[in-house]
Image (cartoon, rainbow, N blue to C red; front, top):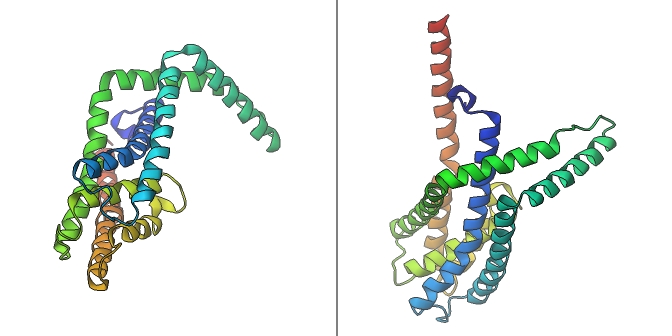
Length: 245
């Protein structure tokens, strides 16, 4: 699809790599933001069940976040770091292809350096837009979760927006560990454990329903919609080919 729009494989690699890293950094930073929200709203130590888990996760994730930012900045600014990574990638590829008994590709190091240059240019030109888009995407998921809680009859008195944000931060942190595709099952369990803590059984059931509804809207629904839009794009390509022919 991207090739049909004139996007080269190198540009796509830069896009996929940069957006993936930005998403991972956002996941690591979110727990720290959640702790600040709970602190300023006076809910950090109000018996929220998994507060200790959130504080521990926030401390670890912020430490990893800081290290990742330093490494990325160094890699993007220092040509020697990119060359060292490229040589390491070349050696790794050689070892893998040796096991496969095939000749190793010789352009891995150059490809790594080229990717670094494209990623640096992309961030220089559109780094601000990328950051805003990442934050908007994350907040969109949070808005859906809050809306589903209200739709399922869970008032703010039971699950406040600050607690909702903290649960969202925990879910984001859990999703950084690739246990299941998209964190399926793991995120639901983590969110339910946190948001339903200390609630009566009826309220806990409504919270569980809201979380499942959120995942259905944000995870399951895009799959058939993606298939429909792909089919529409493919049909348009076929019609264009027939017209050109």
